[in-house]
Length: 310
Image 1 (cartoon, rainbow, N blue to C red):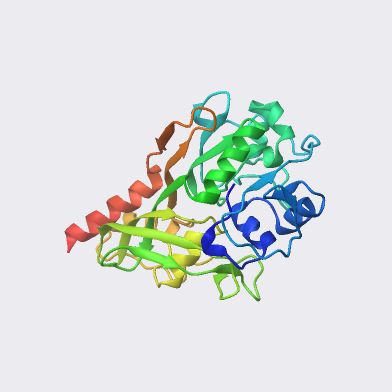
Image 2: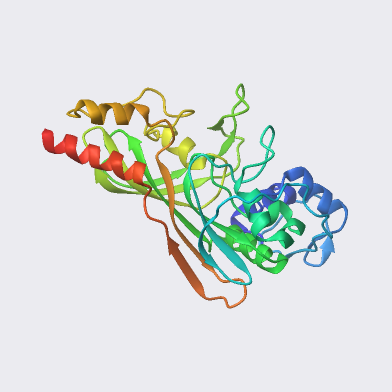
């Protein structure tokens, strides 16, 4: 991979942490110190201030098999070949195991479908979706494919587009360019903060309602909860978001049934609907789309009904 020129002057470990979002900064520091990461062919300290444009090579150490369980969990496969697997993740499913959640995740199902992925970091996962976000994920099936996908994330040639319902009427699109970091007092939340990691979200208005907006969004970076944090920051939290959503905004004009449905929707209305990337082996540009889940379509229908009623 090539280090970005626009991050000249930043620490090497910090830049690599941004380019490799699923690898912890401490892990990157260890790989640097052990000589598994080389910059222009040389072993460098994590504290090196980069100039931008340097070539980085990573020699991933031999992995022990994953201790994560392989479980016979149904997978919604959108595409599969010898190098990659593209999946649709449903709401309510974690991408991979974490504290207090050792099984039942997407990765547990992937390891049953692809036993050799136990030898890949994170089971071949290179990007994540929050538990209650639906939509498309790509999984690497080889180390070569994994490195290619990570490189594409780093130079922004893998395009991830989302659909979201947010509170408040918007007049148009734009870009949110605000750094994101851990909340100072609530470690489960992220927030915009000056010392956070760079984060950019582009958004476009698809449909406007009196109290809500339907958006198409594209990530330039992949920070934890990025879309949810950025939309809240500009005053348009996602409908149903239990962490960042704030007070519920209910459309005027709903009947009793519609009102009950709206009030029971308790997850962020966010869907990873389009994924575009270059195939790791053939370099062909490939694209997939996942239809909006039924429960989000229902919310849109209710908004349109309420708008017609007024």
